[in-house]
Image 1 (tube, rainbow, N blue to C red):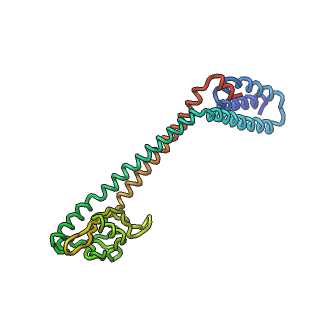
Image 2: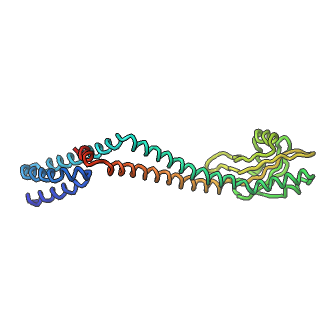
Image 3: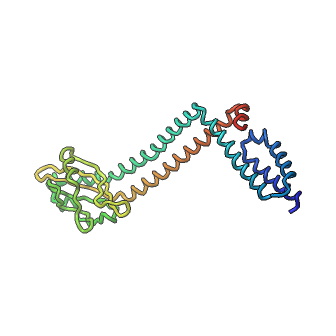
Length: 271
């Protein structure tokens, strides 16, 4: 490669690299830097690899220092940082609301069929109906089916009749649930008879107290599988919204801080 061709290529690449500097720095020093490069190219005919390596290292180091200086000056403005923190807090609150409100609506809505089923079954049992009449026969697989079901328990919490099975049997509620329903008459719980994130079973259950001559309990439930899938989608959308809002706050804060500095400040951070 001839000397003129080599010098022209290096100067062209160097001019492109200067675009990486902050605008105030380019406006103040780019012409002098290009002239310094031309002088150096004229003096350094030999040792081209060493010279190119020296230029590359100087560019990378100085560009990093210029942006670091710019950000340091920006972060030294307490009011700007305070506003950014406030906006980040507001964004976090909005994202939390975007998750919590739909999640609660989905979860509470999952109880609607069970409330009716449990209330109707309790009414029939307290009116003296037989178990077979109050709780029609059913064969719901709790691990697979999304269908609602009813289970009747005696006053000690032992299953009497059930429309559902789990692993061939009727699961029993924790005794604490029965104790609570004895005192309050009703409880709405997320029941997990089989633990686990992938193979676990979670049920939206409504438990009501049966009074009268044959006291006991009625549980109406159904799988939360589809509800949990929708909750996961809501969580993902809320998370992406939160990340997007934080990114806009960071970019906006940096841009505003840069644009609102005086020309003297801009030049000072570039020296």
